[in-house]
Length: 259
Picture 1: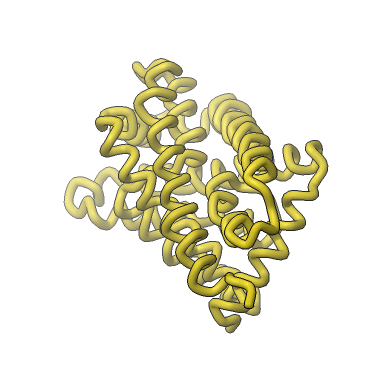
Picture 2: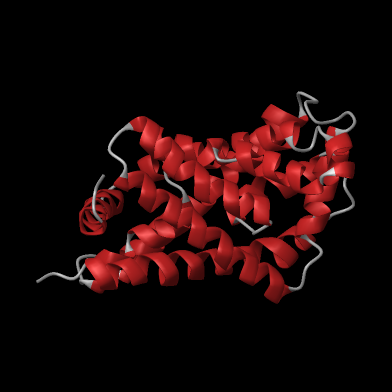
């Protein structure tokens, strides 16, 4: 297993590489990451959302089933390689603290990756899920509605705080994945924190780019404006704080300083 200091060295090298990607490469990798997270969301809807009987008797079990299947997306992002906005919230920070990369480089990457993630997630929501009617029947469509309505029913502050919790755990999952030296170790290291944040009901902006647009496509009484203002903006801001402050800055400060 790599130590915390060795993980920071891996993070710093990856961040330098990410900062040097061409715009086209960044966008393609971001599209793929958005699609991978969406596939994890679809699997969670089928398994967790397809168990209404269990939900009625043991709601915690269905939350766990939802959380246990969702990590497919981040596992693909890390193992296969793709650009995910929420993971990148932490990647660049140790280099920024050591003045090896500029804020401008970070913001450029975040902007491009956010757009690419959105397109990838919505593509899977509309083309791969909606047009194929995978979740159009019962009980799946009810689960799609329930998830999206729940995510757009909180106050700005609640969604923001849930966004912090989500990306704190997502970035720890990425960090743990880099601590592991083999594929099996990486998969388990990523799976555990992601399972936890989904089971606990935190808000991941990129996942929500799949869940809520899918509900809109399936006829839920939710508008795009509601999606953006009630969920996407506060979840994104919370994700940034969770990744930057609690992972990137914390571990960059503790283990990333140049001697």
